[in-house]
Image (cartoon, rainbow over all chains, first blue to last red):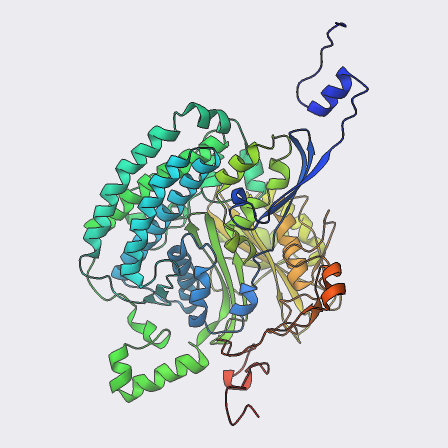
Length: 412
Length: 201
């Protein structure tokens, strides 16, 4: 045995070279994705590895690019609603609402209370649905399959509720500009309440399985730490930003849909690591359940679309079939699109993944001149090339799982 | 943004002008002063979040391209829109905000990719959504909705198969317009009418 050399902790490659100069360290190129289970879609990571340690990482995106903005500029405002389902396809209802509200802002439309209440329930159910998947898949990425089984069962119940409300389980296209497509079915609120009752015990189960789980904590605490400054600089939003300790929730800061009337807490993280991001989502589900119960408790009567919105989405169907004026109006809406004023607006909604923004430039007429979609996942992923280096290969799945992104919205 | 801050900004920087907007405050800023102005915005006015970078193609108008930035202040809970015209219509250029906001990195790459705005000082200005050898900027108004025939990115595949990316058939699609004006007048020419016995011939 020769003498033991002390080497610095950290860089494994240089450590090996220092210990024995004959061992030459070389980096290895590794390509993860675009089709890899842990990339949750079609994200590709090109990495340089030094042993198990990531030295460089370059995310490659665009595999799901469909040109949504170009499409939006070539169709009427109403026609684009189904395309918003495909942005964050884990929470289509909240995308529908965000888009409708952006156009309503341009048209200067106020929706009635009942419509707002329906939309709040939609948004929060979508948040629960997205976070249930986020937490479940995250647990699966960290090696705990059981969590996924529990949360996905709950999502299934949610989809049944969505189906009853919108007619579709996945691509809902539920909102209209100035309202929603149809009123809530009889007894639906009761079934939402039943779901809320059922999801809380499941959350407790998940809590028991993950929060103090030794393996889960070992894999997530102190991993993928994003500082407050870094998170802000990279334009992160949503639970990922709040996990880093920034108090930004548009439902509180820029209340829309009457969120100011509901009592809820916004969880804020301390360390900005993967563990905090899990805690954020778990807590947000509970808060969403609280909001939904408050809405159900004070559910207003009245119309579910704005009176003056008839010129924008469509007159009632029975009127179209019986009245000349409404028939002409419907014809004009389909052929020319709703007539919007000139101007430009930017509206952001607090979606499950972060702030989903629509920047609409109108020159008047039925078609937007320019529509820019700000997908929160796009910004949340841009930090990867800085976040991943310095971590081990096994941490990739955990970090990606904790960021909870969706490529449909990233690539648009 | 409060009225006081707005007038303070407009007084302090005489190159700024107010921009027409249907919602929050919007300012026009010339491209040369953009870096200086955004530094002040970030450091003194606490606009710490760069939400969005994009551009608008005004088609035949001059200046043809306008870069648009959306800022948010997590301290003051305010939005701000800053717009900056590109002087050159042929090679539109704007300064890069990457030294100020890391978020600008991907956003500027996307705007370069889809709109063809060159960001001076960007450390890694290459395409992000389309593949590297793609020759066009699809969000420009002169790019047709159906697309343009282009070679596939994989050269070895092209060599053996002679395949290429072809324009989309617009058959049965929901596309009704290609910009301003009456829809009946701007219907895309690519619309397939082969199903129609009269028009298909």
